[in-house]
Length: 355
Image 1 (tube, helix red, strand yellow):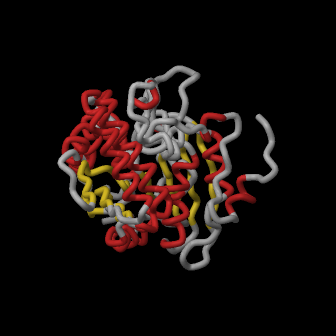
Image 2: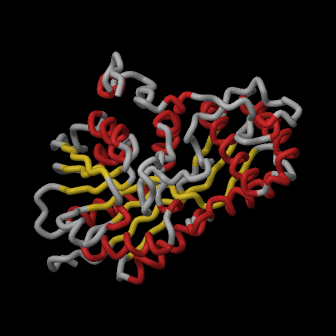
């Protein structure tokens, strides 16, 4: 692994702070076509999108053949690559932070304050990526916190650890540790002593069985779960286009590939946690993207349309022109997009006799 001139900790102190991932040259590569795998890339298109900056490899909702989510949820070969590039996680972090539901924090704080035998919080962050959930949540909770960061990518784990907050809302100490591996095999024993389980943008890349496993693990440990930013399957764009709904439907079908739940995940998770006696609260957490989010909106558009075309290749020709027009409006600061997500708080029955 080559050394860089700045450590992740150094870069984390700067604006725009996620360094390129060591050994992953593809993380900075661009694609000629605005639609990954689209007509221009194969040389059969009009070239309308040739001047548009390409997609960050691993960014957004599009995934190449054989790719899996960042968190390893199923058995896979040793050469399997993580789905999300750090550059994409950096790009979306401000929008994620603005979108997460503040309304779920008060019931969460009340539950955490009443957990039995409290001596500081032990928080498991599943699929932590670069640690954005910890950076958002830790400063909003009182008391000492120890975060256990789970991810399959060692580089992301390293960055998440060094860029984690060091103080809670009341100034109490925040510490972290990292665990690499398969979070699909969570058991109550694995979460023994957990005060809270968190995740962002995770539920929609799980299968029904995996969500049921997660719900059972949280119930067995008697800990609440805050699971944010799951796709809801609805998108609204300014200046509606007749192709909007067709692309949205194809994208949603793409999200359901391989048994993953995509936009159905929140409903399934509600059922799974409720079946274990948890009280479940759901609140919307939409991205609201405007002229100040041009970079994120452009990357999201390419991923959204690219996934739709991968699912329904017959869309390619129309989607090429559609994407070029949407990207032009985005660059001009004229496009507004609402990407709907949902946040879920599951309050499992605490173990140890607390109400």
